[in-house]
Image (cartoon, rainbow, N blue to C red; front, side, top):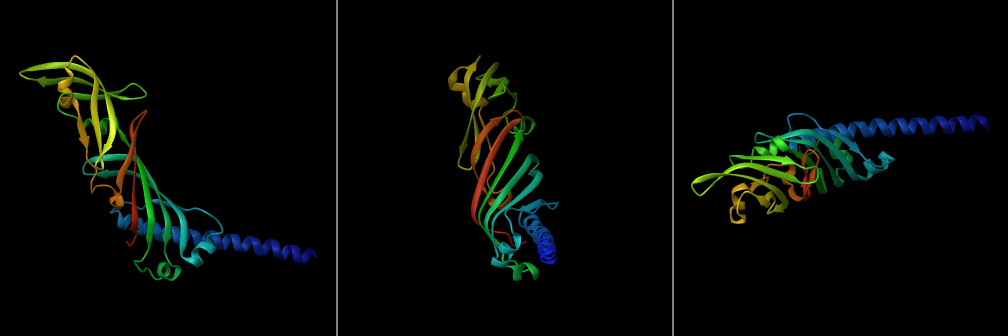
Length: 221
């Protein structure tokens, strides 16, 4: 009886070890595919959620694969803490082992942070972006007619056609009809990994945090 118990314990340990080794191998493969599909300069950190892994591998379906892209630059603008998840990933084990380009995800979600310094790069000339802890603010000088006018305003942030729109409101020092002079858009279309579309945005302590997603995404590498 004691030998049987010892054998079962050893068997469980071996299965767990094999499970983790296999998971690490597929995670590396998916990391390389994600890096290539998203045209990244470095390989992201990838974690396959759920256990046991071998059950997922044999079926060729992974309910959730998380990845961390770190700081990602689109154009000349950095996005910090860019991270995401691929859901319902279909990657047959034989295709993974033979490096066939057939992996797909049913849905990919991504989130990241735009710092105030990044947001400033899109602001109109003379407009400086700040924050009061809960909302972004804007201040500076803009041309109203033929003269420069100093102003302070709060910025309403919203998603408009896949871009982030910052609209000046509660303006001090500038008539409301000139709010457009301090308002601007941060475009994202075609610039984020996997062609995800921005679906939400909110103010955070360091700037703006956005979320984006796409459906039926190839991870071919």
